[in-house]
Length: 274
Image 1: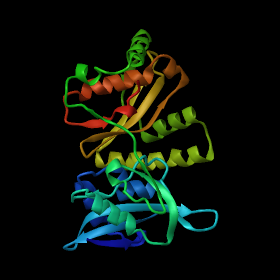
Image 2: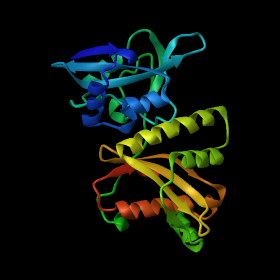
Image 3: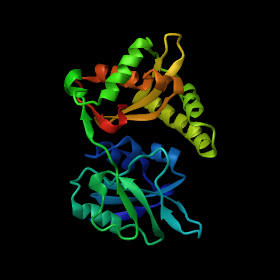
Image 4: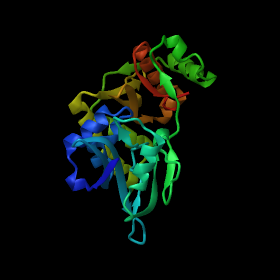
């Protein structure tokens, strides 16, 4: 197994993104444009086979208070992975973690469960939580085991006469998100980063925003969906206090589940409001 370390400035974008795109466990979070918008610095480990990159492992990092390099999970990136077109065997996963250069003294990442090594060594590796919600079934079966709170939210939403609205531009969704979450230094960074990401997605026609509003047209809940690798990735979801009172986000998700029922897609069940 030929695993090589490649610094960020030397990454072949075509080879890297092609590997993430065709990986059996590919994810929108792994693309270089997503990491460039969320991680200040990141390098990559590459498995090379016949001049092709068949596996890649992004290594986002920063410096600790002593100035030492450490792996660090980027904000707005829930999970990463060893992305591979090969079988994700325990041996392959361990080989990647063992190949991380010694200059990375510690830190950690949250990765999909299949990318967690048996021996974490000097790193703290957390398995991303979540269970798959398959949408290739009738709507009634999709929500069959949802909690009473979900259905109670739908009752409140119906009483409030909520209605979906056309998609908004990234600037409006980001402003709504910041209004809901408050203006802090971290949120100010996220405010700009999420706009860059949304425009990248729109440029590729991979998704868009979804809005639920009151009968007066006031936006109460929003989310931005990305479609990639047969999966729906909800991003930058926000709901106002008024929206929470009337079940706006629950109504938004219910509308999305109805329109996506019977399609060969999946998402994390925990990302749907209950």
